[in-house]
Amino acid sequence: MSDDTANLILALATENVELRTQLAEAQDLLVETAVDAGEMHARLEEVQRELTVARADRDAWMIRVRRQAS
Image 1 (tube, rainbow, N blue to C red):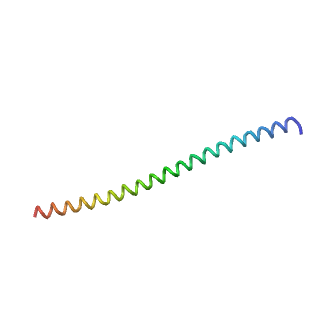
Image 2 (image 1 turned 180 degrees about the vertical axis):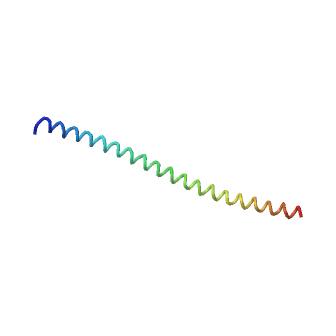
Image 3 (image 1 turned 90 degrees about the vertical axis):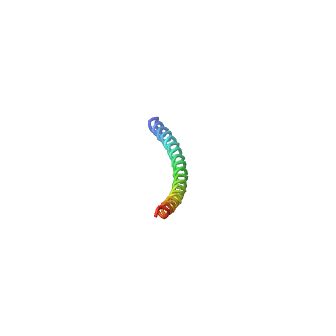
């Protein structure tokens, strides 16, 4: 094997290791992002439930006020 071939193989192997490291880091970030997105989705559902209750309370209050006014 010539020096040029050995150097090329070494360069390719080094680049491969660097790319695998970057891929692993990107995968970790994607997992963290997915976890964060899941937590945000759960919180959003909770806030939507709270809003539904608040709207029902408001509507009930408005009905009582209108009845008392008449």
